[in-house]
Amino acid sequence: MDDFERFDALALADLVRRGEATASEVLEAAIVRITARNPALNAVVTPLFDAARAAVAQGVPAGPLCGVPFLVKELVSSVAGTATTSGSRLYAGNRATHDSEAIARLRRAGMVIAGKTNTPEFGLSPTTESQLYGITRNPWDLSLSPGGSSGGSAAAVAAGMVPMAHATDGGGSIRIPASACGLFGLKPTRARVTAGPEGGEGLSGLACQHVVSRSVRDSAALLDVIAGAMPGDPYSAAPPAGSFLDAARRAPGRLRIAFSAVAPNGMPVDAACAAAVHDAARLCESLGHHVEEAAPDYDAAAVAQGFQTVFACNTLANIARVTGAAPAGDGLVEPMTRALAERGRAVDAARFILALQGLQRQSRRVAAFFERFDLWLTPTLAQTPRPIGWFGIDSDDVDAWLGKLEAYLPFTYLFNVTGQPAASVPLYWSESGIPIGVQFAARYGDESLLFSIGAQLEQARPWFDRRPKQYEAAGVHPRHT
Image 1 (cartoon, helix red, strand yellow):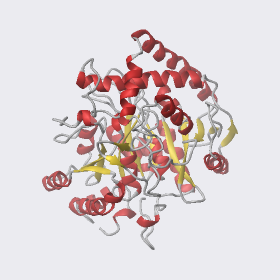
Image 2 (tube, one colour):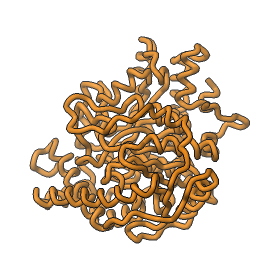
Image 3 (tube, one colour):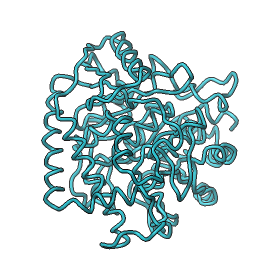
Image 4 (tube, helix red, strand yellow):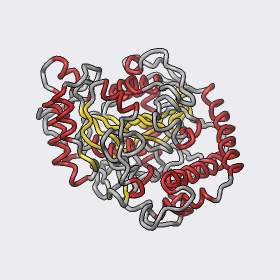
């Protein structure tokens, strides 16, 4: 399959169903690209080629994504028989005895798991660098980070290894690398996808999982596959009115879209990131939508403080799951992880509950804004992709690290707090050729609208064939429809 990269996941599955390609041929095309391109990027940290070949030899289910090769992030979801480390030496000996439910659903849909991708320790950082697995680089510029914490998956997709890959999002970790790598990345509604059977909720309800992808329809089709609760989940999102893939095929109608290029926390926004928003607003207006500059009224400082408290306490819990009440031994966790966990140790139970309640109050204020508007358009990030090493995982200066996070991602973590769906859409590239995403957020439970507007924007300004120069195929045009 020399033309493997011309196809998105749904198109590859269609080839397999029609007998125009075999699942084995599709898998080998992915393996060739992973083998050739991964050394420069360090996106795939655990190849699972033999297991993938064995799965294909046994016959893949004739599901909607039959024969599509897939990569799983080394965080949250377990793949039976593989190390499940969360990017930490503390968990280096942890081996999964079963698939997580989301992974089992992917397999039943016919997907073939070919490897696992890099993540920072516990997914804490908006870069993808760890002492356990090393540095993942951005295919658009190897001196830059691909973002995080799903940077391994995003780098692999941007480099053409697979058409989409697993990702998780606790503060922007799907949308950040989607923006930095020129991909579509949707964070689903809280509890849209089960975290079972290992857990009930991630990061006290802030975290979720889905994918980064080249096409909008792939993201929609995969959410159709993995969405839904399993027995024992503490809560679940209300089911959508129809399939997400159908929503991606449906025009969104005339929408009320608010936009803002001003960071809620007052941090400066890079000119290119602001330009991306204004450009997207003009594009939406040209498509017939009502567009006006507006932003929700909420206490951004209170949201930041509450988020940091939940973040620190959950970091402590990640360590305590192995060590009990004791700190991790020397060298088992990174300096920043240890320092953040110790900050969590200083939070008493009352303060933790009060932090959650404060976040819920702010969420109601944000929800009121979405009674007036269907979507809110912002930069995904306030800065262009940062250089490798920018976030200093080897430092233990938590305040300096948090300051860099506040400057980089003031727009993303709000929607982990509110639980609303939000997506980074690749509509803009800098003068130097680096992708810059814009974020659309919708009402709680309305991923369908994000798929509809995303597909409309994709048709108006296609991005499927935009890829790093070293991975361009001369004269080859994409086939994903």
